[in-house]
Image (cartoon, rainbow, N blue to C red; front, side, top):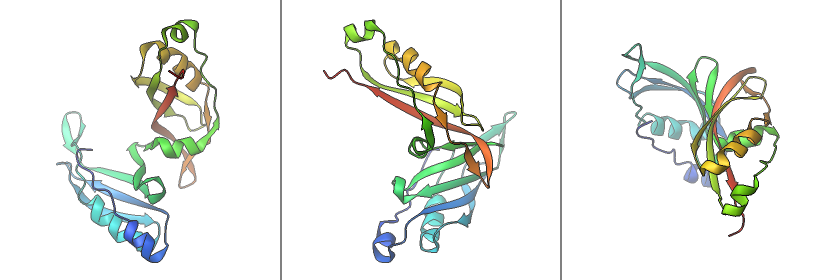
Length: 188
């Protein structure tokens, strides 16, 4: 995404007390502009604000075989996550889901075993990984994005063992693309 306008739900929520997620489909044209927005579900009071914001979004044009194509994206936004996009389709059967939403789907978490060398070297910090979670909730792919080199291996080894509740779209489990951030701090 090149340009994103966040829906301003604050006034509506204060005035009506309504809160919740708005799910919608957005048609992104060959030029990367959002051409149409169709609300699928969500509180009536939040729908128009969502449409008005999403129509201002701009994407890098999607390419298939080098040609620009239109794309139909399914998405959800929730004020509970700071009007963050909860998920969006990235390919048939796979959606991109925010790290905050996926944290709520985590069923089992293994902590990394940090070898002596990083402990002695006082290496610490956030390790950020791109993760693909399978339909069964198992971690299928992990790619390091950032973080101390010495911590990446132990963090990736631990995250590979994590298990998530399957993510459902219309009752069907789908693969999820997300980010995982693990902060290692040795208290210095």
